[in-house]
Image (tube, rainbow over the protein chains, first blue to last red):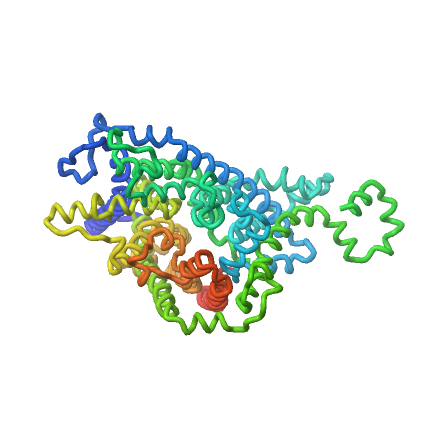
Length: 292
Length: 321
């Protein structure tokens, strides 16, 4: 593709590089600023670096110490972990077998079931009717309320279904001739071949649960059940941090640092897990997924 | 389930009784494993997707929790009319459409240019780095975004305000002034989603036949000419499809984002259909009115998506379903 290297091409590469570096800076600077803010010691006078530079030997981890030892922060982290792990597990247990059954072209009534899935995909009844269902089942103020209503994401199901459809039929046939039932075909033949799609979809579900905010506001009134994003919002909105974090005038971390540190800690699991799975979705695992 | 276990333990029964079993029963027995695998999903769909559709009838009723969904008195189109005639109607529609369309119109070119730059750059390391970093904000929740925006924009110690003050200006309350709030909403959405949005264009660029570029280079076409005459036409159908599908969802203006970022001083420009439904329904207990507005949004949304999908199939031979 890169046949000749004229001055034109070199100039073009320079412009492209500058543009990409610019984009990189626009994304990184805000995140970097949050990080520096979180390690800035109390009463630190910024010598006109706009909070973008602080020598590593001046970093203070007080804000992190305070947060990680604070009962409500620990509680919220545990809640988020339960919701994320339990929720993703239930999502996968519901989605995978359902998508596999739908992907089977010989399934009698397949068109009916696909229509059954497409109707709520295209038309949603809205917030209140779902709220009434959750209320009626007595799920308010339990983890089930934030896990079950989103048990199956229709888009993810369709992506997974079309991935299963793309797997060679012969493999399944061989297993069936050996006397395997469909559950065994799914577990021993299909799943080992589907690792990339399973990881990608599981990541999407997990991110959704870790970021769970609105449903938690909607369904969890009990402060003991609040997940991290709800606590984070309360910390960010608090003019007086005392309400949420034991902070007093003699503390060795500033309000700013505590706010920034809680943003950073909430973000951390996403930042760590995502690059590990990134290679799967950049390869276009999800593209062209939904079309029949 | 009982029938299934019986046929498994006593296969002779099934042979003798085959004529008596209906065709449906025999099909179910033959495909019992597939139906068994579907069962949890089906139960989920009935409880959490179709029961809400049934509950949506309260849009046409005066819902009283004690009387239940079915028992509440019929009210016809009263709630729809209340909404259409209310002072909020035009404001909510305007705000919703404004945010949706501005995010689309301003965000799309940035994503296309970024995708083209990534595709053209000859530095593999830079490409991978920009991809990894720019996809990441997609995975951050709007609450985290709120924290990041405060670090950048808050009047006290936000980076941008510190720069304004250092330059001798007065600090700006970006999140609570109506004019700036709109800019913040659109800008932060572009910041968060542009990188992720490039994936589809990059995949589309990758699928262009490389010999086209070689032939053009041999013919003496410049870099920009190759982009203009090969790359852009090559991804045009993708751009059309993405635009159409976004237009189909034009009533979804970003509920989570606005729910986290808006506040009383900016309700006039920040309130969208979804946030209003939440406040009316959950905070003011106007279940029927809120459901009616949700249903209105659902019906318009369905019409738009179906129409957009048809158009996408006609223009680009591809669509959402």
